[in-house]
Length: 162
Image (tube, rainbow, N blue to C red):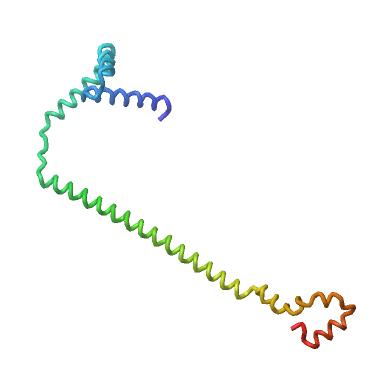
């Protein structure tokens, strides 16, 4: 459908809706007067209104179906069952979503704990190294005055560094 035909169809649809609203008495006074003025001037508009009035008259001539109480009861029951089904489906989806978030959080915490334990076991503790080197650190001032390495080697032989 090209642009011109599409505009024409939209215009016809708007006219159709306006005439239906006029026949139903749904238009306010100003719009009703505008429709009546157009009906007086435009024969195509008037013909369309007459066609719709005839169609409505035919519909009015048809026998109306009688609806029993069982129909109403079964319809309400079907709506209720559908609503319950949608509600339970929504609750199940919410429950699954909550479970997924909980499991994701638990797995994240477990991963963090495993990473902490692994890091603690694998990386050397700097404090342990300081404790091992404490005797040397306590005597660093004396070692700075040593003139040669042989003196320090003798100290090591006497296990002062351990």
